[in-house]
Amino acid sequence: MSTEKPPVLHAADVHKSYAIGNRRIEVLRGVNLTINAGETVALLGASGAGKSTLLHLLGLLDSPTRGEVQFSGEATSDRSAAYRAKLRNRHIGFVFQFYHLIPELTALQNVLLAQMMGVSVLGYWRARRRSHAAARQMLERVGLGERLHHRPSELSGGERQRCAIARALLANPSIVLADEPTGNLDSQTAAGVVELMFSIQRERDLAFLLVTHDESLAQRCDRIVRMKDGVVIEQEQVR
Image (tube, rainbow, N blue to C red):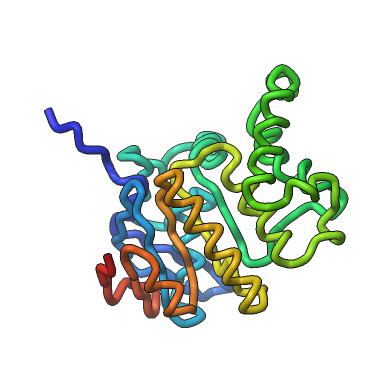
């Protein structure tokens, strides 16, 4: 019997379309993509190529119109929204360009938020000390140990993104999906955030899918996947 692990994520002939009035817009037109454990993959393409739509499907935020998204060998497209949310909460971390932090919450509370939503009130209450300790440790790891109780408005852009990274990593996911994570940062701050992400990826042997327009950033990944008009047109092994 084979002991080889299945891919963390696998898209098989994935299509996604949207109805706008009487028109149907085909955004993805048969994408096949595999991401293995511990692998870093850059997803490149012009605006409108379908990169963010594919990221949302791989992150189980939406279901394909046709085709299948598998997580660790398990078909997910026909599962309930609640089941996909549970998988997402436990195994997939997200980092977006615009942080998506709650303005009224502190850095510590923002990092804890996803974990709070993934369990019952009683379950969270029982595990609160362990959860708080883990969140503090994660914020210290990303360089925010002195900023635990600051709200997003009191943090710089780089600090907000570091907070978002800490939030994505708190549940120890199998994969992190990052959509233009440095697109809202100046070049010097972006370089620091990139170094942090790749350092943590190596430490934890995470799978990592990075949507970017930055060719130099893409060259740091194991593989580059290029998209155009809703299809994968090229895959390049870098390492």
